[in-house]
Length: 564
Image (cartoon, rainbow, N blue to C red):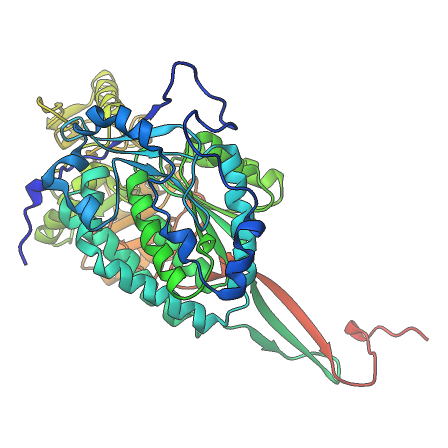
């Protein structure tokens, strides 16, 4: 099947806030003309728990929080929204989006915060609107998720896995429209948008299998008539704060694994990509309803920094997964640690690709192109430093702020004595397009080289030896992804050994980006130390207990201690 990739803009959308009416409304009050949030989860859902039916809650459309009078008042504005254009009819027909959508789901749709207008940076036009949640909406979501957890945690893990498998199938059936929406709202090319949705599907398949293999241990006891067990149990409500550059996959990595482990999930998306979150949650809600499960198992609260801070401070969220910048992640980690909660941080990466003297240069050239400019350099695994042995030789940005950062970085490059070998210009015309840029002439330890710029800029460095290149790879604060191109087994095992790369992802003859879901994804140092997706990452979503069972009539003490 062929796809017209030009039909789906390659830039992400900016989140613009709108507060209707002449006076700003406090976050904790309903907006004029809008329904207040329904009272109390228990009161609303007690009958549903008894019958297992959630159709009444889910039949209420996401746009139902907007009254008719206000809709008519904005009718002229809606005509200019891309969702009203027949070219983007899939937003309505296949994903169920409206001109204005509720951005809070706790089993039903209701929101009372500011309005986010999702704008397509490829042409500067608004796609559609989402009313975010306020403090009251957020608290209601957490309470609903806690109550839903009581139902979800009682299911056997394989049954939870089966429902997650069904979620994967539902996403698979919407692969193309969701991929188009990712391309439209975030800014990836269509192939990357579909690939990101596919990644969520793949994680659901992985999680389904995992649900039948969540293992503990049986350990020998030193005491007669005793046995030691290691058991794993769910945490409760897991909070997920996702980033704009992977608006669906990051949530998928976390939610699919967290759910089979027995947790409910509360999602706060990036404020610039709320439509992807609303559309995804609609799909998840239908699957949960079909299985008689409370929709609040997959809760959503769109919002800004106030919602994110509330999640970081909330003791009702035993684990908070945050994907974003190192600076913000540091603040989130500190707030969670203050309450002795758990955090799973996936932060920045200043990734190096090392080309050894014996590398296959054709392979290097093909790998470096996507590694440097894929997603317009807006991946945490983007190659930002290309380290060459002395013997060897896109799409657009997310918003105007990213373009300004691109320009500021290149200004610093010039001031520091660097040379722009290729690119370096903002492309004229609508949208936030820039040229992929290659920079040379800077020392490996220049401050701008050590700074992660979320743009397609790569610094070319020349090292005298593999050992020197490894040292340069390791000298930056981040430790996410790294890659060595070499045909020497000696060099390869040096690279993956104790004195090799200090990153969480250590590749050989493949680029720094494009990790598979089967392995644990994450990094060291300022990248945060968290691990998501495959391998034993599931352990972060559960609590471990060491259980000692005495099945004898005696009461011996450990270490042979005796009281006589």
